[in-house]
Image: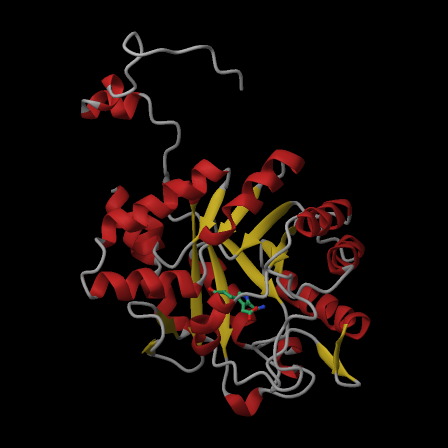
Length: 332
Ligand code: PBG
């Protein structure tokens, strides 16, 4: 952008800010319902809506209840959701076996939701952490999260989710080479139109804590953190390499995660690759805003809308946010 010489008082930037109509005329970014993706937590059983202690106002739904709960937001124009299963501890094991059961919670939910809401976009995580007793996203071998052993499992999980009717696979596991191997498998099985939204840049962030509580993930068992696969918070050039890899391997869309503290990465990614680029306003961000608002330290509505516009300004094409139902009401 070239800035021509502008001088006071010929130029008074406050002129256009004086009235509401002109502020609207010159606003460069807008939030629309199509920007919103609602992350939804699932729980087993029926007739259950459970609170999540670390995320006030967010719930886990049994499949029958989420079918009811979706009616209103779908009528309001909800475009897509991301599903996250929370399964019982007894079903978890070292290999994440429940992830490969065709009638597990997530596959049952996909089929049920597709039947009632066929045009609602369904996005599913590809990672083993909801299923493993050690709570890691991949397979542990010789004390490490083993890349290539994990890949085999992730392919299996991807095919199962696609068979069930998932529209967009979202590998969040950060294994090297996952997008390519998943894309190849999808093509072989004629799932040509199943898309891949890579969590290309997923940082090893402290802001996922409330989510791990929500999906009933236990304490991480050795290794005690995800730093050997999720990215170092201090790096941004490496993020561009991650994206380049995933784009070359066949990602249709990319995601940056967490959200607000990582807007620089969104802008850089959008400017560099021009791919459909999504932000994930993660659980910790949600809970910080929510708890501050509940104490009247900040004004909730203004704060939420501000964060959304910041994502748009940074270049995000859409935002995963737990505030989606709240925002759909506001935008109505
Ligand atoms: C699992 C996954 C996580 C989130 C989305 N998918 C947690 C993690 O990697 O530990 C976090 C989402 C949130 O915090 O809202 N791979």
